[in-house]
Length: 268
Image (cartoon, rainbow, N blue to C red; front, top):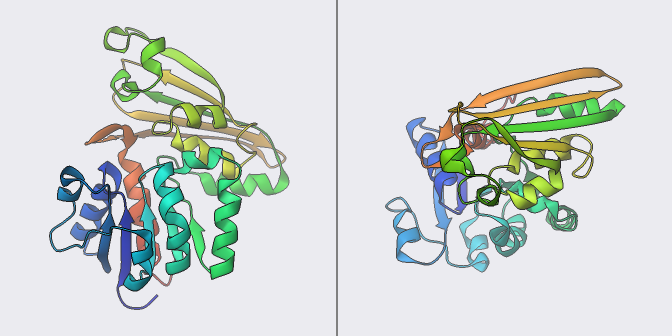
């Protein structure tokens, strides 16, 4: 793509605000032409000065965006994605836990196909997804995604009913199940398991372990996959996002990379 990229943010919480800051400090050829948030003073105050507030999906088309970036949750996808895919050639959907609903992604894909647009799913807090997706071409027999975070990262989630997070003294596995179950119960913490599942063997066959460990400071992800092509283990230890310990800094960085890729003639 030549020229500057016209982008619209749907949601301007911890992730998208960090993305916007990084794009600005990197002097990326990107113009934020609007931001959609909840229409209340606190949310609107987060929007950078000079950037218009976007009140309704019907206002998207007039902005002629090149890219719409969502990081606001399932309700925002339902409200904004159809209009975004009609108005822009590409949309990034970061709230991947929404895809636990088997109907959602096919419905959005049909809208994208009708308008000649594309849905981009970021790697988020994990890496090596190209390897998992490549291995899936020959077939995968098993995929496990293990997430280890400090107790503070699990506050405000169902883990609070299972563990005494404030006084936890040892590493504790508090959830074992499918990616669908994990992302449905822990949509902020286990979002990344949906990406692993979509790249590999699906939401119900991808196994997930969620762990609280008072001895760790970083957010850890270990993905193990085996199949006809061999076996792989991918391990990451990410700094938490400064404004939201449930998310990793790498989540925002993956969005920055994906946005900047849209402006470059070579992509890796």
